[in-house]
Amino acid sequence: TWTHLSIVEQATQAVRAQVGEGRVLCALSGGVDSAVAAALVHKAVGEQLTCVFVDTGLMRAGEGEQVEATFRRQFHVDLVHVKAADRFLGALAGVVDPEAKRKIVGETFVRVFEEVARDLGDVRYLVQGTLYPDVIESGSAHAASIKSHHNVGGLPEDMAFELVEPLRWLFKDEVRAVGEELGLPEELVWRQPFPGPGLAVRIVGEVTPERVAVLRAADAVVLEEVRRAGLERQLWQSFAVLPAVRTVGVMGDERTYAYPIVIRAVTSEDAMTADWARLPYELVDRIARRLVNEVPGVNRVALDVTSKPPGTIEWE
Ligand code: XMP
Image (tube, rainbow, N blue to C red; front, side):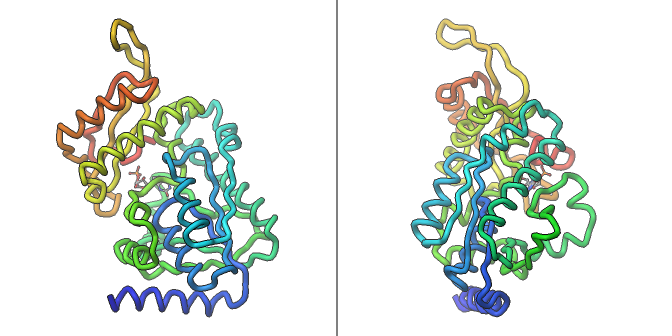
């Protein structure tokens, strides 16, 4: 439509005017905002853009693959895919405090990103997927103070990039419309929000490679069934959480002693408040059966029925 065409046109022109012949860097997170920002900037300045995807080892199932398929193979973007799982999991070893985990993931991310940027050399501009609501909210102390949200802040002084923020005037629904118009896959454009620290804040207690594998497999089952039920877009988020306990169960003739998985699904307008989603019991049942049957290490499933407040959406 006229509006979206005009948004894309205006944004690409503004990016061209800002960066001229300069080289531009963009961190892809796997999320909607960075993906749409990258696609817009790529439309504007093509080969001047390099995208960096840091695989923290804390992403959802298939995220790295999707970024490869979309940006390298579909759009032919110059993409640096950093496989840094060992580094992130190494830094997280033995850490159980939620804020410490966030800090470690954020700092490790900045260090990895900094190394890539240094290797690339003469980059002057950095793309940020800042939306209009972020711009308004950053004036208020509220959002940031509850949990330290992770972004690419924290880069050293001599890495002072000039920011390119092509989504600065847009709301989320406009960002999605722009993403669709640019030809990004529907699955990406309609992806639910995912926290910067990734699965680390959905694993209560220590983040080990084994526990990440359990949660990632469980999370994929939850999302797959939610999608199949046609509910993905109606829910703000729907995911699995791994608590720091094991419980007794029985499978076949065997006693088991394994992890429970908690299903967390919420509806929300802006994540400031949220209601627990009244998922159909048939869906809850399908998810629960599949989790116990298909995910090794899981023998019990629970449903989180806490709204926000008093609960937060994430468990940490
Ligand atoms: P909470 O758990 O505070 O989450 O109710 C509100 C929304 O923010 C997301 N979230 C984050 N997003 N970096 C992000 O980019 C973070 O550190 C972070 N922590 C929480 C969360 O998924 C929910 O949508």
